[in-house]
Image 1 (tube, rainbow, N blue to C red):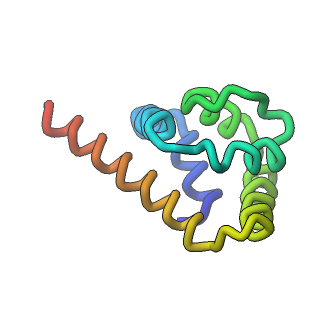
Image 2: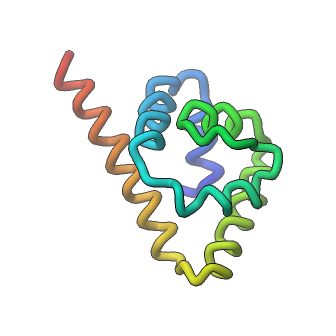
Image 3: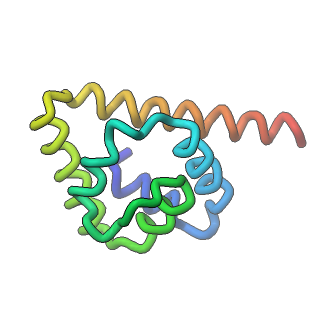
Length: 109
């Protein structure tokens, strides 16, 4: 799944339960090493790196803005000596967190 496809799914109002899980997972994850890259690639974002703020901002962007920010982040990570595998690990960790939270929710029902 591409970044654009993932954002379309997350930002779709019908998937608000998934977006809430993503917000919780962002709040759990250590994104400190990526904050500067996020600021550079999303200059309008600001300083609130909560899951809710990140999702609100992201869902207000266009597909083209998502693509540009994603490409920018990949380039900045390379400049900082972080390889593509590190970016994939972040997405894998996020996916696993969301899946775990969805599973926990279904177990409670």
